[in-house]
Image (cartoon, rainbow, N blue to C red; front, side):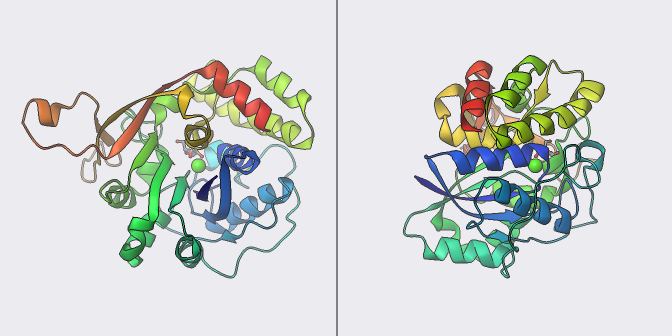
Length: 310
Ligand code: BDR
Ligand code: CA
């Protein structure tokens, strides 16, 4: 089993990603850490506890992260995820307390105690992961890989930038420059990972209370995608970063260099993805391929695997 820490800001799609990860015999979720993003840090931490309670996973500690990005002020995604961060169906009960350790201290403990390298699944802004790398650079080599949702060749929060990267570009830059192998589920693949209404109806009815709840989360979450983005279904961004570890065979990818734009007046927070390899082909630069960039997914397999898992 791959030992993982999930760093997240639940959030509808984060919640579905957590439930998928916890259900998988291929992953061992050792901790969940929270980051301000879709909602305030208190709200997303409370949501993480509630989702783990629903999953019957009260033994997984939840470490609260910091309330703001490395630079600048806080934002939120209330327009998509609502005031609670998990609007729509009644939220599950919270059955345990968050950890007395904050996100950094909890990551430290899990990584130091583990005999194997830890994989980080990052589903929100990269503020926590970057802070951890700044505080404990000596533990970097104990992180085997980072499977993250963020970025893309285009944006969803600005025309150029995806929300998670836009929210804390400095943090994303630190992570992309860290040398840790990165699997990147950007919008190019996550927008291909959608669930249609018909599929969601089946998903909702087939299982127990977890699938019923996930179906209702999707019903709320899809409203934004239909209204604003005009998609044929509800795109499930964060679950892609989990599925990429459990079912790597259903994704297509290219290894390439990715950098984060920090200064553009129109493009701050954009991920600059050298899919073609221009830097090395044209300029002869010794280009580092820091990212496995996911380009496509077998959507039917994605939906079938999600349904089975929840
Ligand atoms: C990302 O932003 C958040 O709203 C979602 O949870 C996801 O992590 C998509 O851009
Ligand atoms: Ca998220």
